[in-house]
Image (cartoon, rainbow over all chains, first blue to last red; front, side):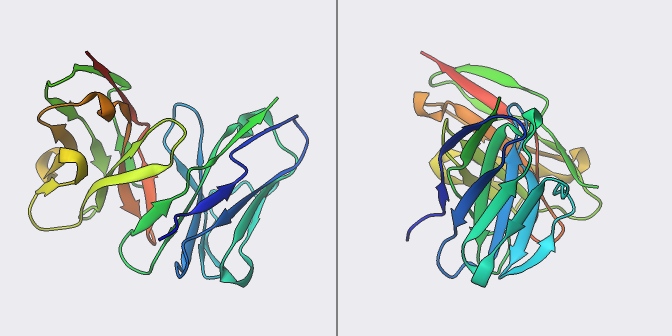
Length: 113
Length: 112
């Protein structure tokens, strides 16, 4: 089975610019997650979708971050405007209904300069 | 709130030697516990998980972990480390509706 696809793999932008990341989950996986992994830290949940509805976005900085999952499949995560502290790897994961059956993508490494 | 502590930032082990990575968690009820491995430029791969039952859990790549409720620990072990095991290891606890809270990770270096 194909894995979780993410693009781009790397992105370098200047602060105050905007950026978008894309995630294509495993076919049939209803739940999709975005995690932020800052260098030297463990991943931290940003947002969780169940189909196309938001389940948990309590840790998403909503003044600059937004995410959507149209039609319950692909998802995009956007940052506008970016700050230096947004430099991180953004990991997408998906799962079937069931206990923690996660599959992670390889991530997008964002550098804000 | 749930939390995970991995007290060792870096560990160096000789190839062929045994390995133990420490993990302590904070959770009010019976936790769901996980160990993931991350190689450079890669996503997270699940090594093993504990939900209930036998407190010694076997995983992939020869890893095992033991859940000790009295110590709030879930340490990862491997009897003989291979050079290919060099990576970053994350302990995590299940939280809320199927989300994960991760520790800060332990980087494993394997010396010849």
